[in-house]
Amino acid sequence: MSTLVHYELRDGIALLRLDDGKANVMSLAMTQAIDAALTRAAAEASALVLTGRSGVFSGGFDLGVLRAGGENALAMLNAGFALSVRLAALELPVVIACTGHAMAMGCFLLQAGDVRIASAGAFKIGANEVAIGLPVPYTALELLRMRLLPSAYQRAPLIAEVMSPEAALAAGFVDQVVAAEALADSAWRAAQGLAQLHRPSFVETQRRLRRESLLRLEQALRDDAADFARLLAVPQS
View (spheres, rainbow, N blue to C red):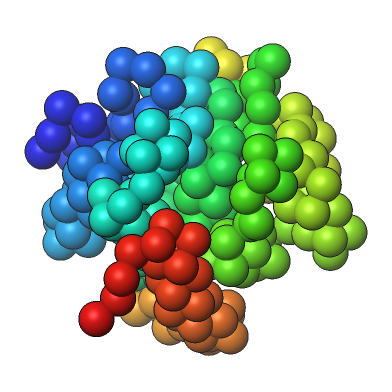
């Protein structure tokens, strides 16, 4: 598939492992590689596991591209958030195995999984946009709204609270925390269980359960696209 996303189909379960050799930044190339892998998985798998490299799930967007601004930054931002919305609506059960740090866009992508399992360790999970001088995007807020406990939703993005895996579990960022050496097996067992679900019932229940969230996410994508273009001073046709 890609040197950035390693794809394996095993026993009807698709395993997508992100690995750019560094922080798994959500560059445009990474986003496109994940998107292509999702298309393949939707066609041939019964469940999906999305994971990262040792010590990091994703550190967020490529800050070099973001700081440079212009059309490349705009394309990266729009593609990254569109991917997160696609993942949240994917008609396939998704397990995300968070192998370490999940910051900013990495944290938002994490919220789109159906089952989210994090590795224990000295890792950081959270939305740090406000701390570095950026407003949290609308789409990010809707993804957080979908999964966080109400008190954590009001607190975490506003004060850029960065959490340990255990604190992230209590807040709702993840569903389970396991020892690092048990993460791969735990995610695989979860995916095996999800693969046994009645697929049409899963799809219809997902549609009903997330209907309002997905409507808000689609509007948020439009609001963000306009906001990003304004912030980056990119003319829109």
